[in-house]
Image (cartoon, rainbow over all chains, first blue to last red; front, side):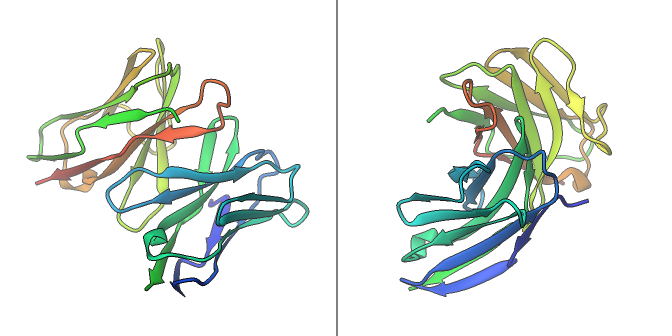
Length: 110
Length: 116
């Protein structure tokens, strides 16, 4: 059973545009929500993360919006660049046990 | 940030042989490490939790006799794929938690295993 659902599966954005990826979770025991960026043939790298007591967190061009009552969170990439083209995974953690979403393949066209 | 080193990055082996993958925490200690498996265009699936000085904990459906995990020190965990078959071909990734914030995981660069 997939406990973290992610959409869309793939996303194509023009350079300078906003990329939005959404995730929903079921387990209310999750207490940490990271986003990972993965390039082909590489391990995931932590991009940004949020805890459920905060509704938004921004780091540079990356923003997480968190809706605890709806059990949803999203990643916004502002001013998307071709170098942002990668696979993005949302995740949810209870302790150090990480549950990943299905992933979103982002392509930013120049 | 902390660095997790994984080796080798790519390995090709014949069916029936065993392959060992190493995962090292370079500048911090890790009493726990995690091993994941990732098929092309799919998400990471947790295979097992490696515990220093004790037996690994395997996820449901993962054969512990096939995927041997050893966590002999605070900085090294190994995954051995025994009697590898073509269906074991996959991308294997390890991770280790931050010492202070254990929900923050650092990932290795992954190992692409191809079994011929």
